[in-house]
Image 1: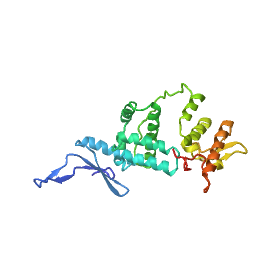
Image 2: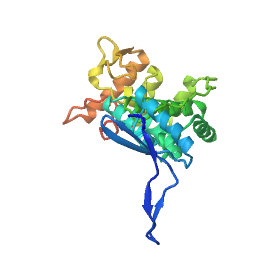
Image 3: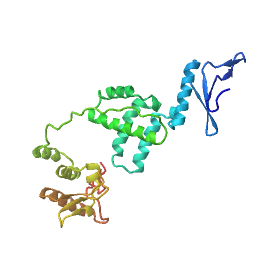
Image 4: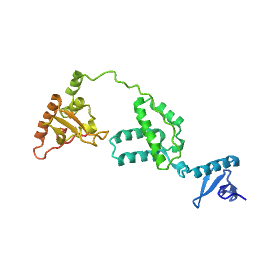
Length: 281
């Protein structure tokens, strides 16, 4: 008599559409009872001995609590959705960079089962991307892929995470943008863009998230500081930059420009376009 809880192997039958006769499928199916419910899965083999080994491995996974019922159904796209949802839920400022990384990864992995994305397959992606991008860019994409698998593991959607090694980055700076070179570039820009580039050059702050978002409430001409509030920077820490003579001159010119525009409605944003709308990019 078979021991209770040992599971079973069987072959399913099907009816031949042409002859109407019953046929026996060559592939062995495995069956276990877990929590009072029957679970079935294919062994994907016609060998009873191999199927029996898979059944024993499956039982061991269940006993150890490492069996994930839907792991075979989880696709790369499911993991990508997990990652993007996590970034959006936490309002991460690097969302645009992650979205760009995911777009590149999708071009290579869309439709793949998560468990089929092995280290070898990831290395193939790296070789493919090295024809298009620098190692630093590829590392950001690999970091996004790592995060996907971690989230998938926490959500109980995958059994294992593949090893994902990062590349060496040879991107040390060999030169600097000198003042004369910067002045030549700014002189060729439209008037409404010059202030944004000047503030970026002086402060070194991020343009999109830290400069274009500044309002006049963040500029203190009296005490001489330009402020970044806690939670606005990538590190979530507040920051202040002194109003050096060059920075003060840029902001004062911008304030005069803003006052000329704000004849009816006061403008809160420091950097605006010619029509008075906040600069977005």
